[in-house]
Image (tube, rainbow, N blue to C red; front, side):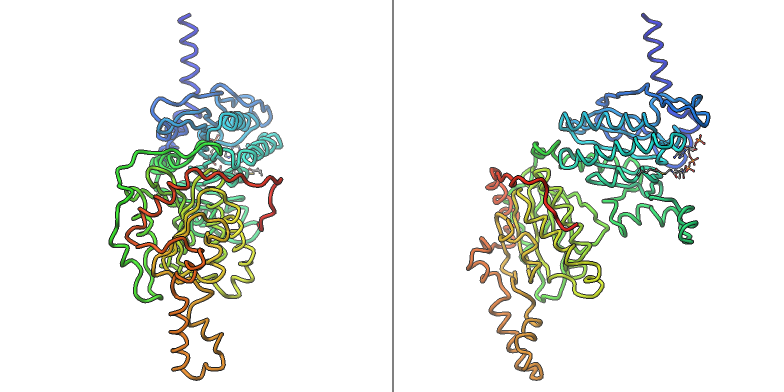
Length: 510
Ligand code: HXC
């Protein structure tokens, strides 16, 4: 018996070495952890249960028969993060560059199937040269099997991807269908085709970093939701994010202990909005003032900063927050900010995460660039997402809520449950100056008259009371009481139960 046990241990030791010490050293030399070291950081200590450690590929061509390495380039199984279950796969770059073979794909599919059956999220740590070239169509078939599962699992269990090395070809499409993608700066890349192919086809000379590094995907393409300095920082951030999320679409997000009084007043908020309507202020100050202990996890912090998206905790409960940011482009809605917020709203709604919307929006950004780019269709995505959401929704208008953007930003009319405004709110079709110039075009030459008309318009409409008189705003609240009022609103909505009407699916403007 002892010999058998020793044999098992020897097989385990060998499997754990992956592609061998030399390649592990090379991985370390690049500042990267190995697939197993990454799981050690991600999961609670001692919680990892590995499956399929001895799986090897079945390819024989290109000398592959002699290159069978136990595990076949991916470590799979489940573990816990702060005691809550998660299925994981971690690609091992030391084994044939983490490339995806038929069996490698089968291992990933197995844990994805288990995750859906058992209602637990999937976290994929990606470090892969894409389809295993030696396997040809078998590896393409493997990718397609994973893609299909990504789609089937979407909206059922949260799926998170961390890009921790070069990811090319098929290796980027599976992450693209998950809920969140995070990257590691300087060591991770995502592209459909690498710089060499780009040069051949389009004559562009571009570095891997420029083409598909963390900067590119967090600031320009919006493919990635965040970037971190190194593997450890990225994995620790994923643990934080995981703590905000429910395990599946029938679960509620976890409630964590909190030590911040829900009735805490913040007198600084009474002076947050500047005297002049054209002066910006930082909406993040309001978010941090509302959240328990300023606990806020921002999603896409580097992309289109005119809108803020992220998770905060209120009385220990997860709340998704969407806020216009007056500091950037006056907080207007445009193509990219609408897409960014729409995706976030849909994630929250799919996973029972209540939504807080903080509004200071002068409208949609005008201009040919926006119109030619399809701002009508992209703006409609956000409207669609909010109007479709059935989770508890609380909205607070701090200052401007003009035009269509008033309707879009979780107005009462499209389904928000509780709508508050600060006394500084201005709810109108447009700003006073623009409105006056249209209404009194014939008087434009008379500056004095126009100024008087503008004042008149401001007095009539630049306030929250016209909307409040109609019940579109439930209450005009003191800024300093925002945390208390919002916490109480969400507490009152905890029993909200709105079943979406059955349909196969909608035809949202994609
Ligand atoms: C088989 C691969 C591989 C692959 C890398 N390796 N990619 N083996 N299939 N796709 C192997 C290398 O031969 C090498 O083996 C080891 O992994 C490490 O690779 P290096 O090139 O030495 O590492 P590095 O210099 O860091 O470069 C990493 C890389 C590069 C950028 C990923 O290897 C690369 O460009 N690979 C090919 C990428 C690619 O074109 N993939 C196919 C995409 S098409 P040894 O034995 O020397 O350690 C695709 C189609 C799917 O994915 C589409 C579905 C929609």
